[in-house]
Image (cartoon, rainbow, N blue to C red; front, side, top):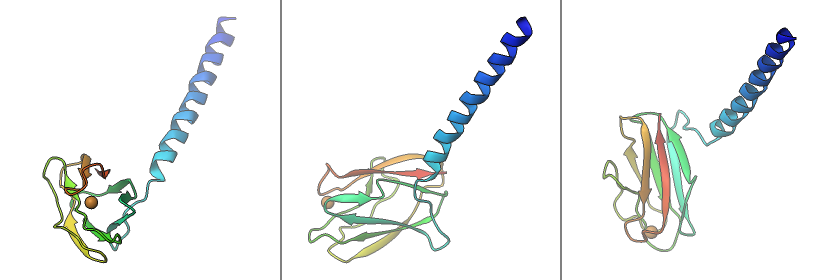
Length: 118
Ligand SMILES: [Cu+2]
């Protein structure tokens, strides 16, 4: 009897692991940086992707397609672009320290997104 119970517990633990694995898979579908570097596009007052995963120190290129100027400005000051007019691009290097870096537009501070450094 006790034997059956512990087997059930093991099964339950295994299925929980599967659920956990699925959750991890979902997270790994976040756009990843390619060999040519990572990109952030600004369109309609929003950053795309809203959550970009890069490696430490990776080059990140920002392109503004809106008719008004925007910036990418890290909340902690660790990276920033100048004001980008329509069609302009600028690159910066992701921080060396892994972490989650929130950034915003210095001109329209409601525009917010996240750079994840791994
Ligand atoms: Cu802006």
